[in-house]
Image 1 (cartoon, rainbow, N blue to C red):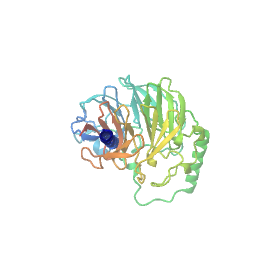
Image 2: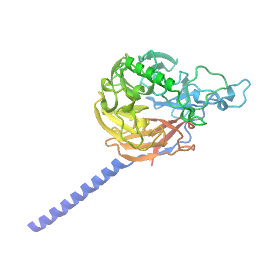
Image 3: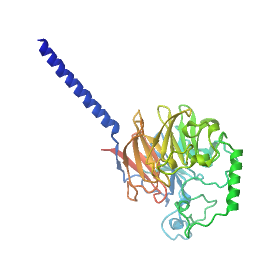
Image 4: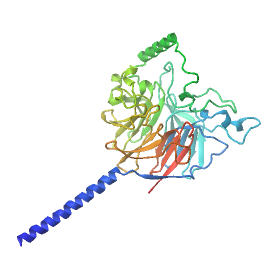
Length: 419
């Protein structure tokens, strides 16, 4: 009898062990599987009023799951603006407003024309925050500025920053810019010898500016790359591109500065003004400070994910700036880097990170816990579902992905969850 009991105990233990093994395998498969999406060719509908969209530099989903698109009308070239001439030389096109509001069905339901910028967010009351030379809060009904984050009165000598064509001071009907990639292409005929005296003067001016405005400056100094809102905490996060990038946190109501940090959680007082600390070669060691084009997002469990695009990495900190960990993504990527916009999967645990990649033109899916790549979507091209300058990414409450492109893309696309 005891022998039979021992046999049954062994059998039951075997079944229990097998069940545990199957459960672990299923759990591991779940953790490692990437979601599937299908390109939606019916969204958005054609834009009204002969508008032609410029490069997309901001993308946000509001509380109603409608989409706000910040675009750069100044990216458009002469051949795209011939309907503005008198008499028109073509049926299309004309400059659009910089801010376009599109509903779930793909229909434009609103717009307003603010100075073009980079990065945006929308709060639960519908106010729109646009990154320009600082963060400005707009009433979407009137397009009027109702709040502004403080910034320095001076700009760093040499300027720079931002993707694509520079803004122009005035609009001449039918006349556009050199195009959205003009600033990324080397001039023909080789490189001229730099003027040593002019270069030395520029470097001296930059050094003097950085002395006057050290990393601890409690306001925006450079340009804005990204804006995120933490409404429960009544805080606004902005990525200031000064000194390669600073995470800056402001009170959402007063718009006054609260705290900030640099790479690896460096306090602003610890940040380096030496450009050698931002030097980076693709595939090489990580720089001590953020390299450039910093974007960010805040998770439900209170972690800040800062994507340092030009260094192919994502750093994770607490909301107070304490460094937690770092993920490296496609480290040999050059030029524009791999780690663009940061979004989360729609599940409560936000199991996955969705990362838009401007250079490789992928959406990367990463395990949020350890940063491991579990999949990717998209390739470079001009067909629907492909990307040519994948710049912005947003996710609505149902897990639908929206993307915005610069360069030759200049469009928004939608991807529906599927099998």
